[in-house]
Image (cartoon, rainbow, N blue to C red; front, side, top):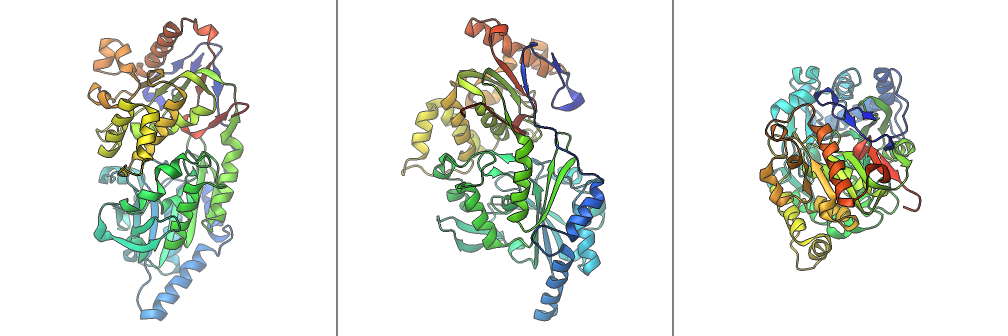
Length: 465
């Protein structure tokens, strides 16, 4: 069967055996007239006053306090999330227009990119992400830097001991607005909501407990689960301490069109969004000997593709095979940060069991980004490392000494290895299936094969899992 490439027209369609199980999200209903729906959500939010009224109050309070102009910080996601910040479904311009209508000045509004521990976005990337009408207003768009201690403010510790360091520009703002996309998340249950602040705007030191091995290993720290989720609870406590005056969250379909609008109280609106996505994201499916999946929009590097790998575990049989294709386009670094690459190499060298034992030892020094490698360890508790077959056109041979799994690039014709064509992803999947058939000694017809059409965004669950 032919399957449309998950990465658009740049690549040829994929080809699978006819008996392949195709796992898809339930098709969510699109929001009709999103521009009008966004305007209505700003005026009729969930468990909150309208944004206009909140803005008015902040202006009056600042004027009363010292006669000055109130400031506003709008927190936006980085380019690993396809939040609609421009176009007809854009959420950013309506927020700013509301603030301006109430009396805020453009010079007193700041757009702050919640990079967390990710790298800073470039000016070119910002220009592609943010509505040009907003940029033309002269409103500054800046990156959070978790390592710039001079731009962080300490707000105390959480009950678990997380040192709450938050971007000072956010802390000092009179009006704090958090935006984002709500989708399943393999540690925090769901993205969006409180994650705009924690980990979006925290200092690197604040990750030591929030992303600790103990919290990551907890059984409740999983996709679509908020109940008893320690990662979620820690993020909520940090965000509550820092404060969020108004939340702007949306849900999207696979074409990045809005399927739900959830504005207002940062806890109640987020909970409503998670309940909404669960109806379409969690789907029953049969267990598979071979699961083929993809990194999705978020998979701009190897670090981010851990999400599709963990999402596959709901149907991947013990000692089965996992095939991942991705389009790792992240500014010349197809893997991730030096911390990620270092701990990933350790996982490759010692294996999942020893790696998990090491990072949970009291003698281990916490390394930021180790949490994502811990998620890969979950995968390798299910399958041996050589049962992961991975391909991305930009994941060059130079990276592979520190990357676990089988490099599918080597299975392609020499011309494809040197200069990947539009056929490269199709060829990678075909070669992967051929290799698996050879290694198992079974024809493909005897193997239960699943293609996860929505990659990291759908959570397939087999009976008993």
